[in-house]
Amino acid sequence: MRISIASLTREIVASHRVPVDEYVALFAEASHKGVTNSDTLIGICPRCGSGVTESQKGFFCSSRICKFAMWKDNRFFGAKGKKLDKKTAAALLTGERVFFSDLRSEKTGKTYAAAVLLEDDGKMVNFKLDFTKGRDDK
Image (tube, rainbow, N blue to C red):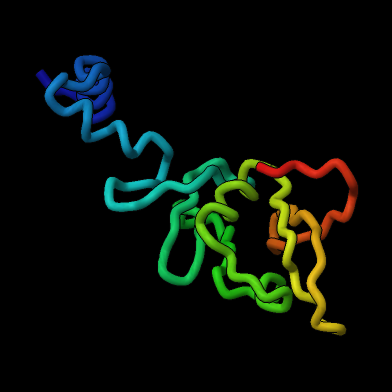
């Protein structure tokens, strides 16, 4: 009797749909596609829905084909006397406005208050200042 690869694969998948109890914990941390156990998930990629993880230089989509990246040392935050940290990046990925009370003006050097929002057009990651009243202090 000759079994095709496709039917053998279907049979194996059908018989192993539920993970063995002793190995369930190995899969709990990697619940988002593209994220391994050694990665620290900080949010979900706004472009493809994969996990976004932190590295030494920034926050990157775990999908190899997606080019989403937020650099820790970027011009926007650098010009305002800030550095993008993990807490801020995680909040921006959820669509939150992140309020800062001490952003530095490039022209005058004085500080001001504003909220920062993430704007991603699918090619470039940008940040936008929001000066509206009734801010979220999340």
